[in-house]
Every structure is written in C-alpha cells, then in structure tokens.
Amino acid sequence: MDTETAKINRSVKLIKGFMLLVIAMFLLQYYQTGVLDFGAFAGSVGVLSLLRGILLSPSLLVTPFKYWKVSTATFSKSSCFYFLLAFVLILVSAL
Image (tube, rainbow, N blue to C red):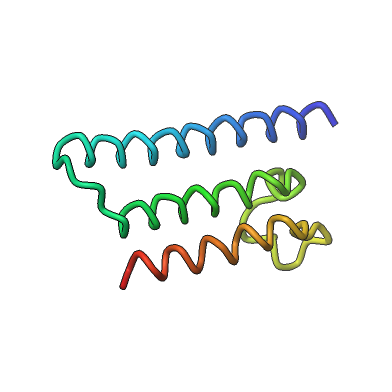
C-alpha cells in the first residue's frame, strides 16, 4: 500500500508540473504577441481538463497505461465529464 501511495504522489506531482507548463506556455505566448488567441486558450483549457480528468482517478495512476482497458479500475463520473470537456475544447481549438 505504501508503494502505491508513493506512485500516486509522484504521478500527481508530475501531472501538476505539466499543468503549470501548459499555463506558462500560454502566458508566454500572450506576453510575446500581446494578443489573446481564443483558439489557443481553448486548447490550453482542454489540455488542463484532460490532465484534471486523469488526476480525479487516482487508482489509474498506479496501473500502467497498457493495462487500463483490462483493469478493474474505472474512471469516475467526474473524470468522464472532464474528458468530454477536453475533447470538445481541443476540437474547438483545432478549428
């Protein structure tokens, strides 16, 4: 149990680091251009939603990615909502 907790904590810190990187890259783009690009904003929020959806299912952070389909652990309802939101926002940012 202790190793699973350590794995979850490491994964959470890594995902939060990626979230900070996404925010920093968006702010850097805004600082350099001085223009608020709503497509880039939608893409950034979409990526943040995707990462947040992964964070809301901590049991999946312990299992390797290739075993997610055969695992008994499932995504929570809020994770599915965040994944749907991420899909829509990333699709909007691509258009």
